[in-house]
Length: 204
Image (cartoon, rainbow, N blue to C red; front, side, top):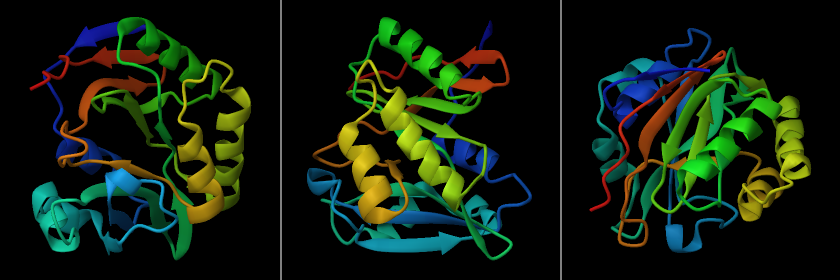
């Protein structure tokens, strides 16, 4: 892979980039309590068009649907495309932060054929958010493949089970609270066979 260092990418810009796919009519945001983050249903679900999101801040969306400071805002995998439900590929990793684990993650994403998206450092581990839109049936197969191919224990097992079985969609956190004090930050963009690395998040 060719590696190019670039300035940091704000979360808002990342989501706006993913939503720039002209097929996407609606994004979905959800609120939930990270202390019980795998509850079967988030507290509030809010849909908005990419244009509406472009004119909002992440904090303003959080303030609208998170009822108190215990809740965080998450981006749902669900997107609406011509009155049909599609999904963005999302992965919640459970491995510790470190360069060796990042290499393992890149290899894992390659085996999954996920070569178009973003890797984020979430504080204790990593998130992946992809650009490839998946029909609902394909997404369910993707979640089962995550489980089957995760030989090294990179992926959070609860994330796979609760997303596929209980919710029917996945969620990745995009704000912080007392339980999850670090806002996820983009550390790499993966596009085709190129990898662009960004400055590491600073831990406060």
